[in-house]
Image (cartoon, rainbow over all chains, first blue to last red; front, side, top):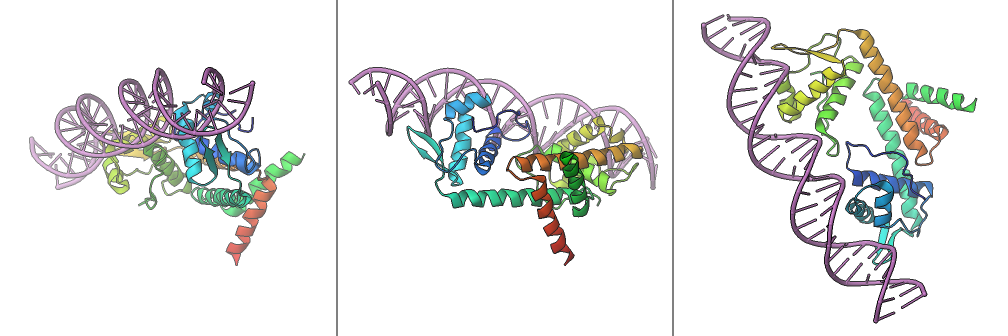
Length: 127
Length: 127
DNA sequence: ATTAGTGTCATAGCTGAATAATACACTATG
DNA sequence: CATAGTGTATTATTCAGCTATGACACTAAT
């Protein structure tokens, strides 16, 4: 299956928004390609152990954002437009970097320190 | 005042937990030092425009975690133990780095790419 | 003693998120 | 046509978070 279902949900954020994020990441990774069909509402509900209504709400939000579209009786599909996917990819990367810098600054951690820590981890992985 | 109050709360996470995080960051930055008195429940409630009960809940959580203590009739204070503060600092730094690596991997962004992006930003700032 | 400022507790009410259980319309397939 | 699998909608219920309000005990200062 294309959607990671391993980890539990964060109890402190709405599940339907976490499903939205999960699908977005799958699209960015290419696990869900343009035109691909998403799991049906009922399928994904079972996989994630949530209510079908919750998945439905997530899918509505994805469609509202233009990332997916619906064919009644058939299912939900990833947008055909690769440009939209690329835009999403860049947006999420920028947002991630922006957030980490912001949060680091709030605990007196400079970009330099951030980089050094990441380099250490990279070098450990290499060994 | 020692606590940043500029930005609004994230509507998707409990306010009391966001207050907990806010206080923790102030402690790590040194804006709140060991032994320092926190704003009173009512004071902070007004500053953050929330209900005093919500601040109270946040303060209870901070005390439960051993970061603050209470003197009835006097207020809440930051723990006297600098080791506890240092431990918190290290924990939050580690957690931040761990999270960014995790989230990056979920959108096919390697540690290398992360570092390169951060370096670009650092160099821009230097100019 | 009185007063003002603390933390603390209790009750009630509101709202959004999530669940549970149905039902209905559409589409493809046999 | 019948069936199974789609999305969609409705209603009811539960729960956590938050607010509003009031009250009480403790502490320090006047």
